[in-house]
Image (cartoon, rainbow, N blue to C red; front, side):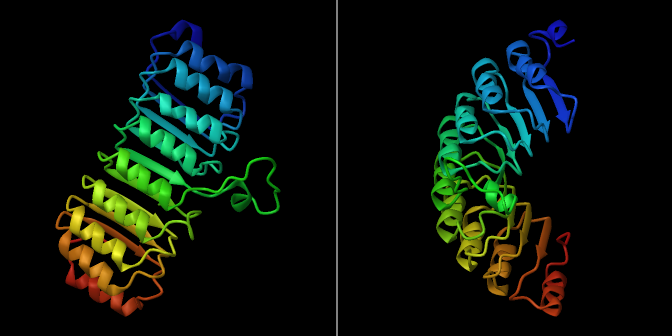
Length: 262
Protein backbone atom coordinates (compact mmCIF):
# COMPACT_ATOMS: atom_id res chain seq x y z
CA UNK A 1 0.00 0.00 0.00
CA UNK A 2 2.74 2.45 0.95
CA UNK A 3 4.63 1.80 -2.27
CA UNK A 4 1.59 2.96 -4.28
CA UNK A 5 1.75 6.28 -2.42
CA UNK A 6 5.42 6.88 -3.09
CA UNK A 7 6.23 10.60 -3.21
CA UNK A 8 2.50 11.42 -2.83
CA UNK A 9 1.65 10.92 0.84
CA UNK A 10 1.87 14.14 2.85
CA UNK A 11 0.10 13.19 6.10
CA UNK A 12 0.37 9.99 8.15
CA UNK A 13 -0.82 9.21 11.68
CA UNK A 14 0.02 5.98 13.53
CA UNK A 15 -1.58 5.63 16.96
CA UNK A 16 -0.61 2.76 19.26
CA UNK A 17 -0.58 0.29 16.38
CA UNK A 18 0.58 -3.03 17.85
CA UNK A 19 0.63 -4.61 14.41
CA UNK A 20 3.23 -2.18 13.10
CA UNK A 21 6.43 -4.15 12.49
CA UNK A 22 9.98 -2.87 12.43
CA UNK A 23 10.32 -3.83 8.75
CA UNK A 24 7.16 -1.96 7.78
CA UNK A 25 8.15 1.09 9.81
CA UNK A 26 11.53 1.32 8.08
CA UNK A 27 9.80 1.66 4.71
CA UNK A 28 8.04 4.87 5.70
CA UNK A 29 11.00 7.29 5.48
CA UNK A 30 12.25 5.65 2.28
CA UNK A 31 8.93 5.70 0.42
CA UNK A 32 7.06 8.68 1.85
CA UNK A 33 9.70 11.29 1.03
CA UNK A 34 7.09 14.02 0.41
CA UNK A 35 5.52 13.67 3.83
CA UNK A 36 4.89 16.94 5.65
CA UNK A 37 3.04 15.81 8.76
CA UNK A 38 3.85 12.62 10.67
CA UNK A 39 2.18 11.64 13.94
CA UNK A 40 3.54 8.70 15.92
CA UNK A 41 1.79 7.85 19.18
CA UNK A 42 3.15 4.93 21.18
CA UNK A 43 4.97 3.46 18.20
CA UNK A 44 7.32 1.24 20.17
CA UNK A 45 9.10 -0.08 17.07
CA UNK A 46 10.26 3.40 16.12
CA UNK A 47 13.99 3.62 16.77
CA UNK A 48 16.96 5.88 16.08
CA UNK A 49 17.39 4.18 12.70
CA UNK A 50 13.90 5.27 11.68
CA UNK A 51 14.36 8.86 12.90
CA UNK A 52 17.77 9.20 11.21
CA UNK A 53 16.32 7.96 7.91
CA UNK A 54 13.37 10.30 8.31
CA UNK A 55 15.68 13.25 8.85
CA UNK A 56 17.70 12.38 5.76
CA UNK A 57 14.90 11.51 3.33
CA UNK A 58 11.88 13.57 4.42
CA UNK A 59 13.27 17.09 4.15
CA UNK A 60 9.82 18.65 3.58
CA UNK A 61 8.43 17.59 6.95
CA UNK A 62 7.13 20.48 9.05
CA UNK A 63 5.10 18.66 11.73
CA UNK A 64 6.35 15.71 13.76
CA UNK A 65 4.63 14.14 16.77
CA UNK A 66 6.73 11.66 18.76
CA UNK A 67 4.69 10.64 21.79
CA UNK A 68 5.63 7.66 23.95
CA UNK A 69 8.31 6.60 21.46
CA UNK A 70 10.60 5.32 24.18
CA UNK A 71 13.17 3.61 21.94
CA UNK A 72 14.27 6.84 20.33
CA UNK A 73 17.46 8.00 22.06
CA UNK A 74 19.52 11.17 22.03
CA UNK A 75 21.15 10.07 18.75
CA UNK A 76 17.86 9.93 16.91
CA UNK A 77 16.53 13.14 18.40
CA UNK A 78 19.72 15.02 17.52
CA UNK A 79 19.35 13.98 13.88
CA UNK A 80 16.09 15.96 13.75
CA UNK A 81 18.33 18.97 13.33
CA UNK A 82 18.40 17.99 9.64
CA UNK A 83 14.67 18.77 9.37
CA UNK A 84 15.17 22.49 8.81
CA UNK A 85 11.51 23.15 7.93
CA UNK A 86 10.12 21.83 11.21
CA UNK A 87 7.49 24.15 12.65
CA UNK A 88 5.71 21.81 15.06
CA UNK A 89 7.53 19.22 17.18
CA UNK A 90 6.05 17.24 20.07
CA UNK A 91 8.20 14.94 22.17
CA UNK A 92 5.90 14.28 25.12
CA UNK A 93 6.79 11.19 27.13
CA UNK A 94 10.01 10.67 25.16
CA UNK A 95 12.28 9.77 28.08
CA UNK A 96 15.57 10.24 26.24
CA UNK A 97 15.33 13.93 25.45
CA UNK A 98 18.54 15.70 26.51
CA UNK A 99 19.99 19.18 26.39
CA UNK A 100 22.23 18.11 23.52
CA UNK A 101 19.29 16.95 21.43
CA UNK A 102 17.18 20.02 22.20
CA UNK A 103 20.03 22.40 21.39
CA UNK A 104 20.79 20.61 18.11
CA UNK A 105 17.15 20.88 17.09
CA UNK A 106 16.94 24.54 18.14
CA UNK A 107 20.09 25.57 16.24
CA UNK A 108 18.97 23.90 13.03
CA UNK A 109 15.20 24.43 13.13
CA UNK A 110 14.72 28.19 13.54
CA UNK A 111 11.19 28.03 12.11
CA UNK A 112 9.85 26.17 15.16
CA UNK A 113 6.53 27.60 16.29
CA UNK A 114 5.18 24.80 18.50
CA UNK A 115 7.22 22.63 20.85
CA UNK A 116 6.17 20.07 23.44
CA UNK A 117 8.92 18.61 25.62
CA UNK A 118 9.13 16.21 28.51
CA UNK A 119 12.43 16.18 30.37
CA UNK A 120 11.97 12.94 32.27
CA UNK A 121 14.72 10.38 31.99
CA UNK A 122 13.85 6.74 31.47
CA UNK A 123 14.61 5.95 35.12
CA UNK A 124 12.31 8.77 36.25
CA UNK A 125 9.49 7.53 34.05
CA UNK A 126 9.96 3.90 35.00
CA UNK A 127 11.28 3.57 38.58
CA UNK A 128 13.23 0.38 39.08
CA UNK A 129 14.69 0.29 35.58
CA UNK A 130 18.45 0.71 35.66
CA UNK A 131 20.07 2.90 33.03
CA UNK A 132 22.67 1.33 30.77
CA UNK A 133 25.26 3.30 28.90
CA UNK A 134 24.72 7.05 28.71
CA UNK A 135 22.71 8.64 31.46
CA UNK A 136 19.89 10.80 30.12
CA UNK A 137 19.80 13.93 32.21
CA UNK A 138 16.79 15.63 30.68
CA UNK A 139 16.48 19.31 29.89
CA UNK A 140 17.69 22.15 32.12
CA UNK A 141 18.24 25.93 31.93
CA UNK A 142 20.94 25.62 29.27
CA UNK A 143 18.58 23.80 26.92
CA UNK A 144 15.77 26.31 27.43
CA UNK A 145 18.14 29.27 27.05
CA UNK A 146 19.54 27.92 23.77
CA UNK A 147 16.05 27.12 22.53
CA UNK A 148 15.02 30.71 23.21
CA UNK A 149 18.11 32.07 21.46
CA UNK A 150 17.72 30.10 18.25
CA UNK A 151 13.91 29.83 17.99
CA UNK A 152 12.56 33.36 18.51
CA UNK A 153 9.42 32.58 16.47
CA UNK A 154 8.17 30.14 19.12
CA UNK A 155 4.47 30.67 19.82
CA UNK A 156 3.53 27.60 21.84
CA UNK A 157 5.65 25.78 24.43
CA UNK A 158 4.69 22.97 26.80
CA UNK A 159 7.20 22.03 29.51
CA UNK A 160 6.04 18.99 31.45
CA UNK A 161 7.13 17.48 34.73
CA UNK A 162 10.52 15.84 34.70
CA UNK A 163 12.33 19.16 34.49
CA UNK A 164 11.22 19.66 38.10
CA UNK A 165 14.52 20.73 39.66
CA UNK A 166 16.38 21.51 36.44
CA UNK A 167 14.65 24.59 35.06
CA UNK A 168 14.82 27.80 37.06
CA UNK A 169 14.24 31.51 36.57
CA UNK A 170 17.32 31.72 34.33
CA UNK A 171 15.81 29.51 31.64
CA UNK A 172 12.36 31.09 31.85
CA UNK A 173 13.70 34.65 31.81
CA UNK A 174 15.78 33.88 28.72
CA UNK A 175 12.69 32.36 27.14
CA UNK A 176 10.62 35.46 27.90
CA UNK A 177 13.36 37.79 26.64
CA UNK A 178 13.88 36.13 23.25
CA UNK A 179 10.50 34.50 22.49
CA UNK A 180 8.26 37.54 22.56
CA UNK A 181 5.81 35.92 20.12
CA UNK A 182 4.70 33.35 22.72
CA UNK A 183 0.94 32.86 22.72
CA UNK A 184 0.55 29.65 24.72
CA UNK A 185 2.68 28.41 27.61
CA UNK A 186 2.29 25.35 29.82
CA UNK A 187 4.52 24.93 32.89
CA UNK A 188 4.07 21.75 34.90
CA UNK A 189 5.89 21.01 38.18
CA UNK A 190 8.72 23.52 37.83
CA UNK A 191 9.60 23.86 41.49
CA UNK A 192 12.50 26.28 41.05
CA UNK A 193 10.83 29.10 39.14
CA UNK A 194 9.70 32.14 41.12
CA UNK A 195 7.74 35.33 40.57
CA UNK A 196 10.73 36.63 38.60
CA UNK A 197 9.83 34.28 35.76
CA UNK A 198 6.24 35.50 35.68
CA UNK A 199 7.41 39.12 35.78
CA UNK A 200 9.70 38.53 32.80
CA UNK A 201 6.85 36.88 30.90
CA UNK A 202 4.54 39.77 31.76
CA UNK A 203 7.06 42.35 30.61
CA UNK A 204 8.04 40.68 27.33
CA UNK A 205 5.35 38.25 26.15
CA UNK A 206 2.45 40.61 25.64
CA UNK A 207 0.81 38.31 23.06
CA UNK A 208 0.37 35.50 25.60
CA UNK A 209 -3.23 34.26 25.30
CA UNK A 210 -3.17 30.94 27.19
CA UNK A 211 -1.27 30.05 30.35
CA UNK A 212 -1.32 26.84 32.35
CA UNK A 213 0.81 26.54 35.47
CA UNK A 214 0.60 23.61 37.84
CA UNK A 215 2.57 22.76 40.98
CA UNK A 216 4.98 25.67 40.59
CA UNK A 217 5.38 25.96 44.33
CA UNK A 218 7.36 29.23 44.51
CA UNK A 219 4.99 31.36 42.45
CA UNK A 220 3.00 33.72 44.66
CA UNK A 221 -0.05 35.91 44.26
CA UNK A 222 2.19 38.85 43.32
CA UNK A 223 3.67 36.99 40.35
CA UNK A 224 0.28 35.82 39.18
CA UNK A 225 -1.25 39.28 39.37
CA UNK A 226 1.74 40.80 37.54
CA UNK A 227 1.38 38.54 34.51
CA UNK A 228 -2.41 38.97 34.49
CA UNK A 229 -2.04 42.76 34.59
CA UNK A 230 0.54 42.97 31.83
CA UNK A 231 -0.57 40.27 29.35
CA UNK A 232 -3.77 41.91 28.15
CA UNK A 233 -4.42 39.21 25.52
CA UNK A 234 -4.75 36.45 28.12
CA UNK A 235 -8.04 34.66 27.57
CA UNK A 236 -7.47 31.30 29.24
CA UNK A 237 -5.63 30.62 32.49
CA UNK A 238 -5.33 27.36 34.41
CA UNK A 239 -3.70 27.43 37.85
CA UNK A 240 -3.42 24.24 39.90
CA UNK A 241 -1.73 23.14 43.14
CA UNK A 242 -0.19 26.45 44.18
CA UNK A 243 0.99 26.08 47.76
CA UNK A 244 1.16 29.84 48.19
CA UNK A 245 -2.50 30.33 47.24
CA UNK A 246 -5.48 29.39 49.36
CA UNK A 247 -8.68 28.43 47.50
CA UNK A 248 -10.23 31.66 48.79
CA UNK A 249 -7.40 33.78 47.43
CA UNK A 250 -7.59 32.04 44.06
CA UNK A 251 -11.33 32.74 43.90
CA UNK A 252 -10.60 36.38 44.66
CA UNK A 253 -8.15 36.54 41.76
CA UNK A 254 -10.68 34.92 39.43
CA UNK A 255 -13.30 37.51 40.36
CA UNK A 256 -10.88 40.37 39.81
CA UNK A 257 -9.93 39.12 36.33
CA UNK A 258 -13.44 38.02 35.47
CA UNK A 259 -12.96 38.30 31.68
CA UNK A 260 -10.49 35.43 31.67
CA UNK A 261 -11.68 31.85 31.21
CA UNK A 262 -10.46 29.87 34.24
